[in-house]
Length: 244
Ligand code: NAI
Image (cartoon, rainbow, N blue to C red; front, side, top):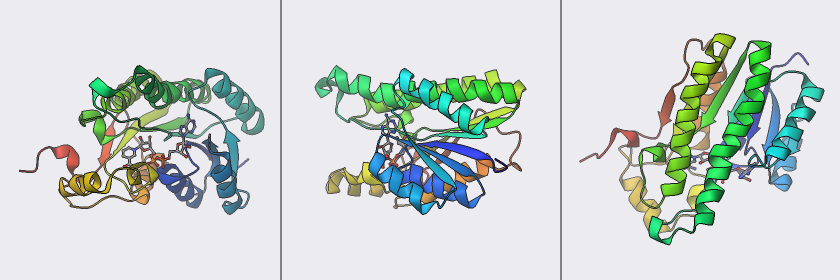
């Protein structure tokens, strides 16, 4: 295949879907990964031959290993990996069951690590590649998200280490930290909570999935060189701190 390819996890909807659409526009063949088969397959149809859907739970070592066996067989190379799949199970720590800690860490951190391990090895051998991990501004701290913030802080640490380990092999690894973005994930929040969150934004607004896709496209671009190990905030300024 002449086209560069890009794996996007959690591509069936929200930010992942916007990233996939943008990378298709940039000329990538998109390898769409999700556990949501219905939306994943539906989206693949829209891509008219420039995408293929693979059903894979990124938190399962077995499924990830099988996925990469298939991908290597079919494409023989991986140019870009965007680790976007993520979940929330919010609660204050005294009400949070340990299962909700495990589940969030399993998908957001272990799943991202498993995908990086497999793709990173292929990229190391081919001496090229880009990895973009979607973390969250919440890694800096959000009440009710001890599991989620810890998982996303882990993703920032993972990104920095992989930039060190893979840099000399021509592989650039960066993270994008979205703030409040309008997707199913944030639409699940109670209206009054959402209003308070918007009010706390320096921009007094939410971002769109396309705002994240834009920065991912920049980080994947051949012309973008010499940036690695960084976390780029796309959060309407929320990461600056208290705006009072
Ligand atoms: P979403 O809930 O709309 O979509 C997430 C996708 O990931 C879904 O299609 C889901 O099926 C898939 N997924 C979940 N678990 C999976 C697994 N084990 N294996 C494979 N696929 C799986 O979420 P959204 O809002 O698009 O978020 C995307 C990423 O951006 C996540 O990592 C999230 O933590 C992060 N983020 C989102 C923010 C927001 O405001 N929406 C803010 C900061 C970060």
